[in-house]
Amino acid sequence: MMQFVNNVIVPYVNGIRLCHSKTQKVIAIFDVFEAHRGERLLDLLKANDIVSLFVPATCTDRLQSLDPSVNREDKEQLKSHFHDWYSAEVINHISEQEDGLGKLHLRTL
Image (tube, rainbow, N blue to C red; front, side, top):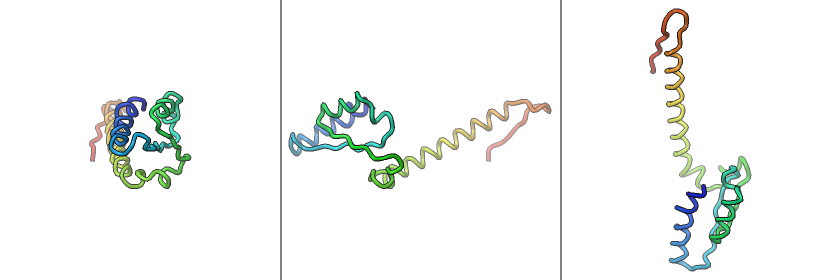
């Protein structure tokens, strides 16, 4: 998260401030995931005059505007890819196990 703030958020904010004004207020909205609440991260945001706000747990779909729109498709694709990968891993593991009758071979559908 520190790298993301240093490499993405801060340069973006600085560019916005150049175009508008050096006193442009900036708010970073995070969920309450532990990596978003670390002291070093909050200090870094504060040092760059970025105010951090936290969305209460289980409320991101209502209060974080990108979650139900832009992020939804990405999250669904990530979940689908994980399920495909995990299913393949389980099938591979099962097919390698001896069941007393020789190897059990499964095929993917």
